[in-house]
Length: 377
Image 1: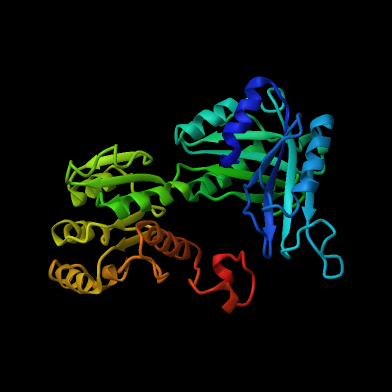
Image 2: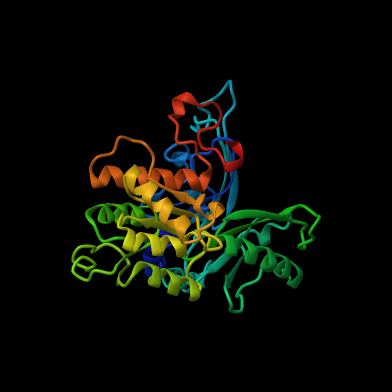
């Protein structure tokens, strides 16, 4: 929902009811992840996507019906070998899509949700998407981190069970459908609850305010990261040179990273791109970075000669072989990149492959699902 949040808020504020279709579960080679949403307005306009185009038409029609009826529905879209175009999902995947009406009456707390998400405050939204008692379908509970929850899913027992599970999903930044008994029984079935986890955006910190940094920062922003550019040289680290990033910091890279870690602003989703390729900057920085307990990715730019010299210096500084093994250097995948923009794509490709367990090989050379999970690889 994050990608359509602003459009939905504008319609909510105007009093316009909106049909919202959300992917709540995926199976096999589904094209969009759980949490992807599509909006349908009363004027017939559509925003967002639940399948990259495969079943948008069917969801569009359902959303129009839901706007009129006010009754939410849960549909499964898939294909069979003998009728592959029955619903248009030709990729071979299966999607569960929950379609609901959102307006000031059905979702009075939506403005609060939007405010929390915009302020980078961690918040989970739990919605009943299936239940034997149809009057419970569509009930919501808003769970801001560190604050009291609002709304109820039907009973104290249900709320307690979902609160506990949603806290874990929020900590990991995962959207998921949870199953319970009708009154929140852990081993029961019959009730399904979808949890959106609006965790703060993951961070990308780009060290070295060079031309390549500008390209990497742009693609990092495009991928949804909160991007910071850090350089000790004030003549290069300027807002004018990096107008699209969230933060431009003038500081010694190792000192800045140590401070961010001490403040608790570095976590397992953080990406560090070291583009300085100058030992007086990158060796002290990598000494700090490689010893961090958990980050998603650490990459360092430089030639193979620079890389070899860097490894010697890191070993002389006492960095262990296990920690050195965390380093991706030279940075990026082999795409034959030449320009800063092409190099940024190669770096982004390596980051994505590291996150999802991709091989970096052409899909034409591989077998199995294209939109796989980490365990599928």
